[in-house]
Amino acid sequence: MNRKKLFLGVLIALLCVGGASYWWYSESRLDKMIGQMIMTGFHGDGMGENAESFAAIEKQIKRGQVGGVILFDVDVSGLVAQGMTIPEAKKHIFSSNIKSMDQVKQLTAHLQSLAPDSVPLLIAVDQEGGNIQRLKPEHGFAPIPSAKELGMGTPQQTYTIAYDLAKRLTDLGINTNWAPVLDVHNPDSPAIGGLERAFSDSVPVIITHGGAFARGLNDAGVISSFKHFPGHGNAVGDSHFGVTDVTNTWTESELEPYRELLKDASPCTAVMVAHVINAKIDTLPASLSAKTIQMLRDMGFNGAIVSDDMDMGAIVEQFGFEEAIEKAINAGNDILIFGNNLSYDKDKGEKVHKTIRKLVREGKVKKSRIKESYKRIMEMKKCLEKQDRVK
Image (tube, rainbow, N blue to C red):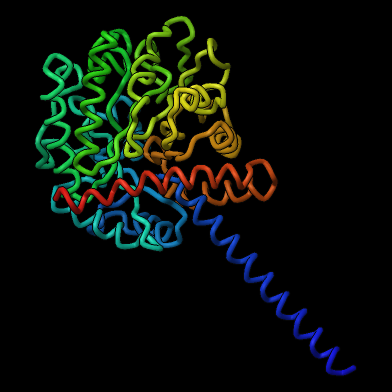
């Protein structure tokens, strides 16, 4: 009888230990999957500037609370704190991640070394060309023509420029470029046409040059992104600063570049969803709209879907921090970008991670939704294996 009791006691203890171990493993794995969905900006150049803030991003990477970072050459938040408007601040170079080519190379190598479990960190920039270049000639980086300029040339020239750009990015340790823009050119659009970020007002030109630019990046081992779905080119406002409604200016033809290019989209190409409101599709901003994101899936796109910067005025003015994250994930975004540049919080990545964890715990976001995104992100990160072969 005592032996039976002893056996039962040992069995129960083993079951408890096993159950606790399984629970710990399951929760730890969930934390890792959530971390892969988060990309954030940070302060510091890896050379001693903003040491406290830089230590915070080091900690978040080591803990797996973020799966990617985005680099900026302008700390807009710092200049705004000094009294500048955001448009004025964007014209300056101040307290940034990017100072020189050697410094960027050391920075990215260090950050990459902190990534746990041998899963590469996404290190991203917006290096479209023209007015949108985080790596500028004053940093020692070769200038790139604007999309509008490229659209006037041949697709082969666009491919070559994008390929050469990607080789320079990989040399610096940058593996993701949030480009190319598939928006239509409209000179009255302050955020797109006014900055010459679109290839053309002709849909066939956008398709040929947008596809060529993405292939050039991908063939050299850099992740690319078509943006800004479902179309930002005819917007008369700028979603960086507030709500941008394109209902009366958007046209169905703005979907055509996506329909055409997503047919055979590489897993190395993501799609970035805009913060614009298009009531012809939904009353929510596209980035928070399940209806809008489902359109991408209905086009046959199985890759990673990325939100535009969740710190933009179009989001923060309408939704609370937690509500915006909940809506963005449930709408179908796989990666949430927090540029952490228009406003700044050194612990942004950690706070986003804790918020998603809370939403899962409360049943507002399903674990299955997290797993879906994790699978797509891991598939996309396989593309980074190409970098060793093209250097």
